Length: 400
Picture 1 (tube, rainbow, N blue to C red):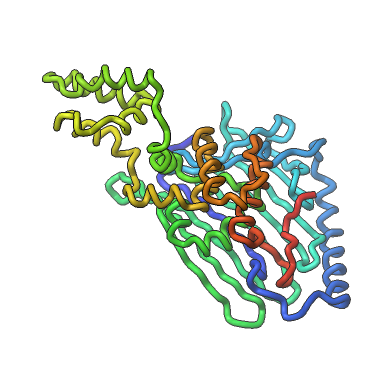
Picture 2: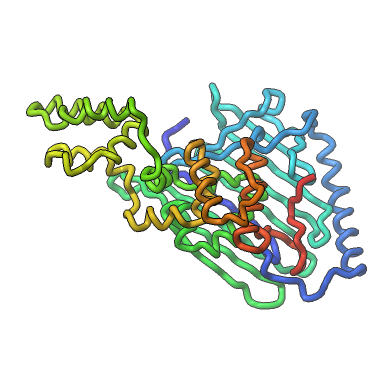
């Protein structure tokens, strides 16, 4: 795959209501009749083309269709689809948890690579919209997820989540996330909300209400909850004071420390590289090392090695260790120790909310548990993106 200087992650959602904007009046028979008639007309037209697209037998999970991961400052889309669902053609697939008709095209780019990915989903049975169309597209330069909703009153809106990698002219790439929200109920002037941050974690901490109300429900409905996982390096720093290094890592550290104070520059550098390559257990032993026993040279290399792992101030790390929202985000981390520690702290902080709750293994079960925990802790239902009138809790994409 060509080297990229600019990668965009764009998530666009067009819908009305967004959980906050209500219809002028509850649904009535006349309006529903109009919607149903329009839906049937569009469905009939589309089904003519749908029938010509080959159907892949069986129901697939969303994580088999595609997964989104962040490697450094690059978002990567991967897929575990069978060969029958790949190639220079569209196929129909049934995706667990996603209503409607889904069309898919995946073009490979060699060993374990993807050149082009496109998923288009159409829903015609929503009581508040003519049609709901969700699209996922990825190629060498762009990744986008979009949802369009045609509404009978002419209103609408969008959520635009945009991530860009830009060169500063000196060869250094910087990343900026921007979340734009536009709401128009068809009667009043549009309302706009714009927030940004260098990463999801920072943007969420700085704008918790906006991210929780608009971005998180979108990711949840697309089964991308894990994208909101806490930064594992920050989680490591927050919990490292509570973890204890193994005896083996402590012994290894004691053998390396004298070499950090050696007269030979090469020996000091070799010891430093050995410390960096020793893994988190060895770094944990270094965190718990008595600093008063270190020489100035050892202390300098101590800070050099641990610097990238200590991005938070001590006060902020302590605060996050008592923040239920951060602990919930930690439940999506890959590191089992981070998940278990976060869950244990949640149980200690929120005894009533966590009563009878256990930490599951599977991602689907985990998403449900996190939703339940958040609802119990906040004392209100988790927000869902919806085109329904105010008071309705039915999401755009409920489970089948």
